[in-house]
Image (spheres, rainbow, N blue to C red):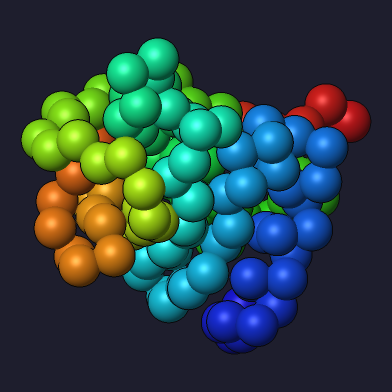
Length: 141
C-alpha cells in the first residue's frame, strides 16, 4: 500500500464526525509512514475547574491519535483496532493555546501495536508523555 498523506488526513478527520474527537475539536493535522499528529485547542471545553488542561482530555487526545495511527497500516474492511492500555505522565500544565500529540511506533506487530505519544504545546514544550497499546482484531464475517 502506497502512503498518501492527504488521503490519510481526510479519512481520519472524516471519521471524527459525531464522536468524542469532534466534541474536543481534535483534528489530525500531519502524517508520515511511521507517525501521526493530532491537535486540540486548549480552552474552557477541555479545562479542569481551575482553568488548566484536564488530564483526561490529554489522554483522550493521545488515545485518539494512537488509534488512528494503528489504522493507517490496516485493512479496515477486515480488521478493527481497540486500545487496550493507555498511560500518561503529565509534565506541565497549560491553560490556553493548542496541544499537539505525535504518535510514533515503538512496535508495529500484526496483533499488537505500541506507541509513544508526545503531547507538546505551541512552542514544542513537553506537556505530557503517553504510551498506548492497541490490538488488531478481525471483523466478524
